[in-house]
Each structure stands twice: as C-alpha cells, then as structure tokens.
Amino acid sequence: ETGVTQSPTHLIKTRGQQVTLRCSSQSGHNTVSWYQQALGQGPQFIFQYYREEENGRGNFPPRFSGLQFPNYSSELNVNALELDDSALYLCASSFRGPGNTIYFGEGSWLTVV
Amino acid sequence: AQTVTQSQPEMSVQEAETVTLSCTYDTSENNYYLFWYKQPPSRQMILVIRQEAYKQQNATENRFSVNFQKAAKSFSLKISDSQLGDTAMYFCAFIFLNSGGSNYKLTFGKGTLLTVNP
Image 1 (cartoon, rainbow over the protein chains, first blue to last red):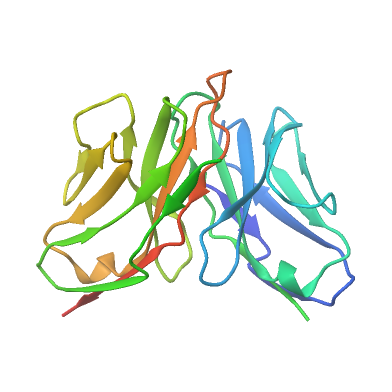
Image 2 (image 1 turned 90 degrees about the horizontal axis):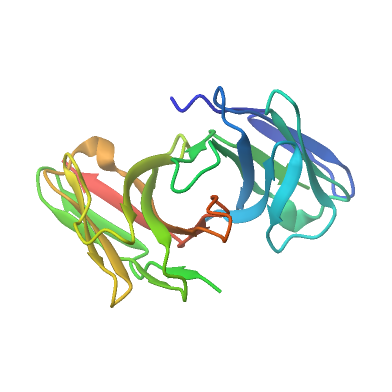
C-alpha cells in the first residue's frame, strides 16, 4: 500500500474522445508525475507537477495536459484520443528533494477503440 | 539522453534459489540514483531497492542486493532465496538530479519478467 490512489481503474473510450484520469497523492507529497506504460513496455514519463505548476515534460504532444490542485491531488487529461493512447497510466508522488522515494499508484488502464 | 537497457526479457528460477537480473544504463550525468522496481500482476509499481551513484557500497534490502559497477554503468539485482511472491516484472530505473537538486523523471528499462517456479 503506497498511499497513492488512482481512478478510474479501467475505462474504454472511443477514438477522438477526451479522458480525465485522477490521482490522490500520498499525504504531504508535493510532487506528482504521470507515466504511460504501453503493454510489454516500461513506463514513459509524461510530465511532472510541483506546487501546481508543470515542472518537466516528456516527449508527449500538447493534447496530454495536467493539473495539480492545492491538496496535491492531480489530473491527467488527454484530448482527441488515438488508438495508440491505449495504455496503463501511472501516477507517482513524492516529496521534492534529492533521491526521495517515489511511490506509484495502481494505475488506470485506458483502452481506446 | 539517458537510456536503461535490460537485456533479459524473461527469466525463471526455482523457489529458494538465487537469480540475477541485469541492467545497464547510459548517462553523462555524475549525480544520479538507480532503482529496481517490481510490478506484480496487480500492476502496483513497488520499490525494491535503490542505489545512490556516489556510494561505492552496494545496497542491500533483506533478500535483495545489487552489484553496482559505476565505471561499467552496470546495475544488476540479485534475489536470494527466491519466493513464489517474487514472480513479477522487474524494472531497472534511473533518475538524475537536475541543477536544482530536485527529482525530475524516472527513466525505465523495458523490464524482465521473472517467474519463480515451485
């Protein structure tokens, strides 16, 4: 149990639609990151938020966007869904600082049809 | 760019035996951390062990230990007395500290599927 919770667990969307995934960080964690894990692959970094501002971004198009709220919970939004967006989306939270442990949620499995 | 390579897509081991998972990485950074994460079928990514690059001593956590060879950029995981519950996907991951000294992003390998057989 890492204290990081994600919702929904599974969802199916149609190509072109929009989706919002949610994450509740471990208590007190001020940094949240999102990762995309395609089937059979390692997670790929999407972006990171610290104190409600984007703090770094991976190689993902602008239709991937996020928010971090004052209580450090977070959302990942994906617009204009494509079939290749089908993946497990992982939320990770930590305290900001050198080498602090990063805790992951169980993920949201998105299927785009 | 940082890359992490896990050359063993799948491995199997008998219960109670020892197994070693390989990982190599490439970076020009000097200040970084290395991790092994375990992802069982439940999908929860669980930290197994971590190693600070500035420490020469290899990290150990109970049955798990690493062989960190900084010059060779190698970071292998040894699991002793393997248990059925160790069956999972294992990911090697790397994070470097940016100029602000803060965590940035984890870079993962593609993973090694470990099966522990009874």
